[in-house]
Every structure is written in structure tokens, then in C-alpha cells.
Image 1 (tube, rainbow, N blue to C red):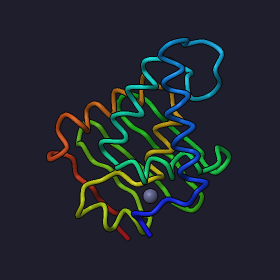
Image 2: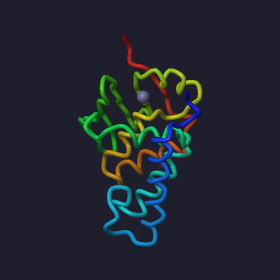
Image 3: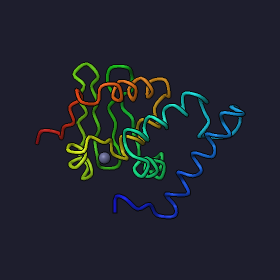
Image 4: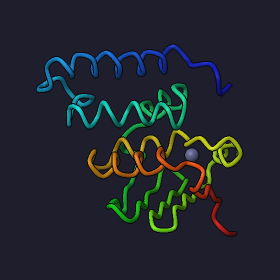
Length: 148
Ligand SMILES: [Zn+2]
């Protein structure tokens, strides 16, 4: 289930990549995937590395209205995705999240589609700071579930 994309998900990923390529040649006016130009391309690349392309493609299929970002700055990210919560703290390098895929992610150390979606929703500059920090030192980040 985690390895195979539906045709819709493949299409979403293909579209994202196509727009990115076009975006590098012509950074203005090509819609949502090229907003921010270079930063967005870097962000999508790093997310692909941290999540795997399959999950990243799934991130693109989560509707914007399912995501409520309460706080997103250089120090903390706090968001709700449908019934799930996400809290990220940069000082303590902690990511706390509660979806089913995240239980496995704690072992495999890959970000889930919800985290991808939040990082694609917030300001690109901020998202890039986070993704770069996680990518540079993945082993020192703590992947946690909320205390019940
Ligand atoms: Zn999740």
C-alpha cells in the first residue's frame, strides 16, 4: 500500500515535477508549484529525500482546507491536519505527531505525508530552514508520539 501510487497520485507528482522544470526556466506565472521559484524546487527535492517520492506525492493530494497551521516560524511549527496534530520544535529537534504512518516512521525515520503537506503549506523560506535542518542532521532529531 505504501509503495504503489494510485494514478491520481502519480499524476500529482508528475505535475509537480513538470511545473518545477518549467519553473526553473521561467519562474513567474506558472501557478502554485512555482511560487517562490528556486526555494520551492529545493524544498520539494529535500522533501523527496526525507520522505520518499511516494509519500511526497501523497502530500500533494491532501486538500489545503484539511490543514490548519496554528504557528509556523523558525522555532516551532504547530498544525492540525484533519484529526492529526503536528508539533515541531527546533531547539530540542523534536517532531511530535500521531498518524498511523508516523508509528512506522519512528522506525524508518521518514517524514509522513501530513508533515510534507504542512511544510508545503507554510512560507517557503521557513519550510526550507526546517527541511534543511532535518536533512543535515537527521539522526539527532527525535521522532515522537504525543504522550497520552
Ligand atoms: Zn502523518
